[in-house]
Image: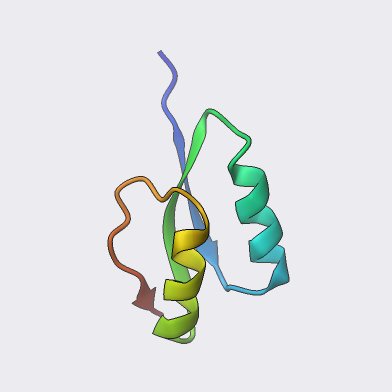
Length: 60
């Protein structure tokens, strides 16, 4: 049995957008956390993929 890799994204720029789009195509990974300077941008990135169990975005 294979465990899923839990990915955390630091930053919410265009590279994060590309990574999120690619993450949707893998079967052994899942979005887990978003870190950003502002809670607003972390929250904006969160709905763009299916975050497994992520209910909050936090400011770092």
